[in-house]
Image (cartoon, rainbow, N blue to C red):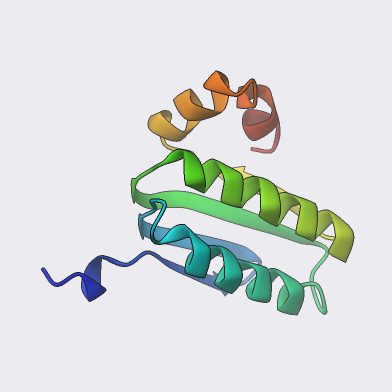
Length: 107
């Protein structure tokens, strides 16, 4: 599989922001920017958005940072952001930063 095919993606459809692929320190910057663009666009017509994490194939602490950034942006945009299908690895990373309750309270 080529490196390009392995890049993570984010898309929004019907009030669901879906992430797929592997997130690491090298891929998180562009994914974060695209997610922020989608959140801003969604704020024009939606009051809530669900981030579907089921498609994550690998997680890194950078993914948790990205979700925190998206959460702050959504709040500024007046959107309620929640998460579903958080992988166990992401929950473990969140617990190391005392963010497990934050992540799970938004499911």
